Amino acid sequence: MTASKKPLIEMKNIEKHFGSVIALAGVSVDVYPGECHCLLGDNGAGKSTFIKTMSGVHKPTKGEIFFEGKPLNFERPRDAIRAGIATVYQDLAMIPLMSVSRNFFMGNEPERKVGPFSFFDHEKANEVTMSEMKKMGINLRGPDQAVGTLSGGERQTVAIARAVHFGAKVLILDEPTSALGVRQTSNVLATVDKVRKQGIAVVFITHNVRHAMAVGDTFTVLNRGKTLGTAKRGEITPEELQELMAGGQELATLEGSLGGTV
Amino acid sequence: MSDSANVDANVDERVKEMSSFRKSLIRPELGGICGTVAVFVFFALFAFDSGMFNSQGILNWSIVSAQFMIIAVGACLLMIAGEFDLSVGSMIGFAGMMIAIFSVTLGWPVWLSILIAFVMCVAIGALNGIIVVRTGLPSFIVTLASLFILRGFTIYLPQTVERKTIIGGVRDAAEGDWLGAIFGSKIFTGLFQWFGDIGLLATFARGNRAGQPVVDGIPMLIVWALILVVFGHILLTRTKFGNWIFASGGDAQAARYVGVPVNRVKILMFMFTAFCACIFATCQVMEFGSAGADRGLLKEFEAIIAVVIGGALLTGGYGSVIGAALGALIFGVVQQGLFFAGVESSLFRVFLGVILLLAVILNTYIRRMITGEK
Image (cartoon, rainbow over all chains, first blue to last red):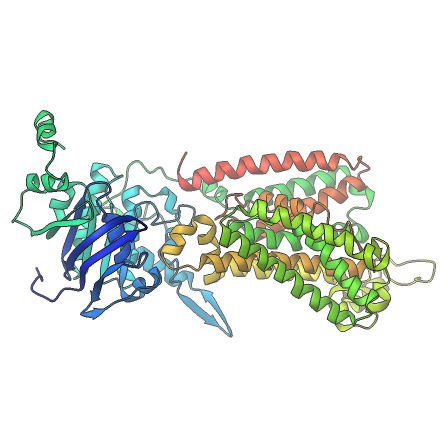
């Protein structure tokens, strides 16, 4: 664990208002390299708004963002990507009709110069794609295999591998496991673990406590636009997390009748 | 999955070995290739003696196919980028009319008239694109509006300045013009004369062209078509920008998230489509020596049909320029072939409708195979 290092990203008292709606009312989170920071919260808690602020989609109404100690002001998502903050969205990671290698290099195409013209270097793209996929444990039929033929978990893995390959220092995963089956989920969680061990900071958004406990080093619970607290692994039990997420209401009684399986 | 490297792990027993036939099916050009072969076999059987496959006949359907190809390349790249342009036909009429008005009515040099027409068309294309991108409206509606606006002006302007809807005299004006020649002349005329002299090509026996070959060169129209097809194909498959075209049409939001300038790609493709329409118009005006207000009618649909026959998906993100070119070839060969075979020409539309339907069904099936839905 490298948690003793300085934080890679410090988000201080972030507020975001949409008109009269206060989506975030002062959220502070520090993310450290090599650490998986789980962001938990029920629907409407402000998780999505918060990560969109981190990835440059939204500008915070108030509050400061420090990246590697320097204050940051993202105008566009592109700025965040350039700074090394990559976001993998649940449904929008890949384009199914395009091949894996075309998807992998989408927006970052390798080029080969022939005279005054630059061409897409397919050979290099295919080679890199195959080796990166092998590292992540996905065996492709070929680099020209369409992404549409991959499973949901594999698509997430390709998107994560892509972000890592292009030098992400912070990887934001927006509910990567919520639409996946058991086996695919464990594949994605294993990928997260691999990425973390490479010293990359992972921000993992989920509303599933089990998935969070499986890979998380730090847990922050959001509720109604506020931080309910940040805890380190071992300082908190799944039950406590669950209760925080639900705001402690009613779930206790529900959980009783469901036998603690929520 | 038979690589020796993966024997140990992760060979998914549920992934069936893909037959090479099925693999070859997953190519956007497949429909176009099959269609082209079928069409040539058909006409070779039923219209071989009609003169369709002698030098004049070949030139005849090559020119028609080349016309379709020019607009199909633009429509193809635009469709892969996820948009349509229904104003192509009106753009052809408009561009031709502008050239005629500038060069004949106003007496400007032809090269200047052509250049201004190009600038106007590309600007209108950009405007189409900007409106689509900014408003988020379907390009179908936006370009439908341009279809009527442009056609209206194309009819109104010549009536206002010349009191007629056809302006002639462009050929005289274009005599000796360098840019006019790039669109209206023929190449390899010396070579074809030599072919005629050595008896490889039939020559005229009588009249004032006696001794000249019946086909005296390759029209620049065909050269333009080939240049555009090669350019479009390389752009789409071999460049970074080509990847962006696929990405913009495949899933614009996903492409934006990884930094692809989707709006710029789409606007540029609208401009390119307009550019292709203007090339078509210029070649046509140089060939006929006149511009008519009804030129280019229905061309937008013919371009889209050629592209769809060529394997592109109407929803964007998938397709091939070579396929679109083959679609255009099928189009031209059938249109002229029916004429050679002595078939009532209205049946051509029946054929169009049928082949369009078949192509769309085939494409849907292919897409399911690629994305593994079925």
